Image 1 (cartoon, rainbow, N blue to C red):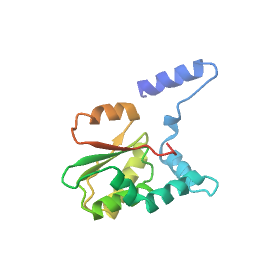
Image 2: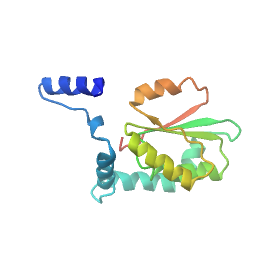
Image 3: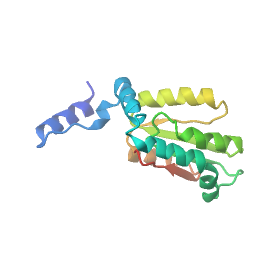
Length: 156
C-alpha cells in the first residue's frame, strides 16, 4: 500500500474534525461522477465558462499578445474533460500558434481520457499531461524556458 496514502489516512482520521483529502476520490468512478455533476443544469459554472471560451476566444488570445513565431506552453490547472478548453485549443491550432498544451490534473484517469480524446480531435496538438498537485507539477515545468499561459478557471 502507498505510504503517502497510509499517512494521509492516519493523519486525517486522527485529526479533529476527521478529514480525508479529496484527491483520493479521483479514480474512474469519481471522475465519471464529477463529470456528471459538471453537466447538470444546476451546475452553471460549466456552461458559463464554455460560453466565455467559445464566444471570447479571439479576444482572449489577442489580449495575451502571443506571437506565432515564439513557442509557449499553455498550462491548464484542473484540466478535467477538456470540454471548454477545446474551443481555445482549436482556435490556436487553426491560427498556427506554436504551443504545447500541458494539462495538469490530480486524476491520472481523467488525463488519460483527455489525452486520448484530444489526440483524436486535434491530430497536430502537442500535449504533455502532468498528474499531481498543482504546485509540485508547476515546479517541475518551470525549467522549460518557454513563456507560460496558465489557465486557472473558476471550477478549479
